[in-house]
Length: 453
Image (cartoon, rainbow, N blue to C red; front, side):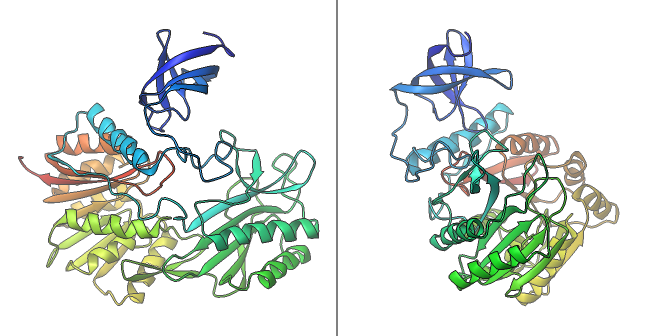
């Protein structure tokens, strides 16, 4: 089977990334945009992670209903990969991804709960990050990355994941930047000015934060750009300029200037108010985050009078939800700025039964165990890499009666649940949670109980 060859493939499963896994002539292929049950005519493009990669050119038979994608950029954009699947079909495949990952590690649950659908499958994100680039003709581009490319950007005319006002901001920034002749930053020459546009809009309050990341500041041309956008869109609550003079292509920087507003916005989630600054982490689907936290609290059971630990607590969003029931909540987070935000959020909501500790969970948790601290409930929400081995061991040593695990990666969830089973826990229930409609990504909540089933 050679590059460029056209083959007929039967799609039998999905990769953890949501791409089709197919068989053709006894070989395994990765077929993007295909799902189990599809029979496709696909052209071999090369190899990906040791497997042949083939792109479908014709669907001979389909294993799922298809629809016309609502977004004009579908297929080019690296974001939404499942817009051609009706939302119920997306949920069905996401459930399968979570169940398959756990089954592969020998993890069984006493109760498999149905997936929790997002309240809105479109226009749900409260944060989007856009990149500036120069097109082949040198014209300024402001948009998202092409699928499969880290250095190629296309102009976004309308994104169906963000609000109408956010789309207006993108258009206004592009128009004023082009009118002023401000060049995009060039990754190869490290010349130019404009690097990123970050938009955050709170669903609960409607406040909107716009951040421009630039290579040089102070700069009269950047000031003129900010003034023009603000004059066109007075609805913008706060606008921040961030200087990023380094070569790394990340939307962060060395200094910030607040041009309008207080430099941050407030979000309401589950009846609690949270401050969001340009660098704060907050769930990008806030309405579904309310459901996620409510479900996690329910899985944790009655918390009245209990001492609760929240590992990887971020800015305290889950901690504060738990603190309305528990006697005391301890939050642990490695990012010092996030801990300060968490403390401020606790004060903002009048909750004085929260304590937040700054430091890596793999250092703080063993130290708490050595100090003799014990907890009635432990909630963990680790990054995609899952639990550090030292955290996994410390959880086994602490032997809390119940652990609630919130995961953004079914593969590492499965590995960690297997480890906790070896430490004496059994999985009482698992529920997938769809935080990112139109993509194959799926979160999950697992409730574990210490002792025999």
